[in-house]
Length: 248
Ligand code: MG
Ligand code: MG
Image (cartoon, rainbow, N blue to C red):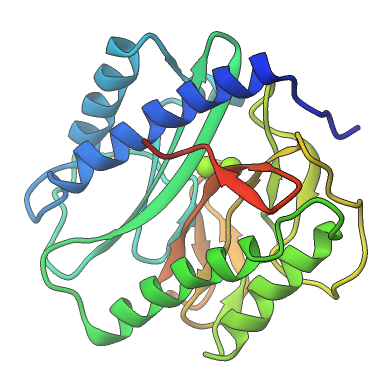
């Protein structure tokens, strides 16, 4: 069931989303060669707690950290580690915040130092694919209109669109109905309504779409070892379009 949020619920989700956005703003200044993802995780957790929130991911189905830190060929669900970031890496950081029982969820991929032109293009196209999808986020449209637009744009660059993981409804639970694939034909699935809150999150690979889950049960990598990027916003569907909740 896709829930429609009340104004009170939307206000709580806006605060959750604001805290997520503050975390991204703060870490964007710190992501450089030499820092560890464990350090970033600790800082994010401090910011979340200081703002009256709780990290949504920590303890979620046993996940050990406040952020997912997915480096280079890790697509999603990477775990923070004590390895230092290196010049030329790309790092996807996914952050979830629970504020008084309501969640915000947003991921960004960051360049570490100076990155290659091919990595730059992967980041630009993945970010743009999110907004290509969001252009169809509007009451009256069908859910797969968003999915189709994301896939269509990423495929212009012959990138692999990950199929095993999807966006999702969000609110009281971090993951609610409906699942939101980043591929498919337009004009299908539920009709979007004002008051729905959704997390849209393209995961785009430089090469094959195929992914494999590592022995830890979380870390998901590309099968061909090429890099992957991930951008996500939590949004509210309105009658005229959408409002991004994971912003300040
Ligand atoms: Mg996320
Ligand atoms: Mg999500």
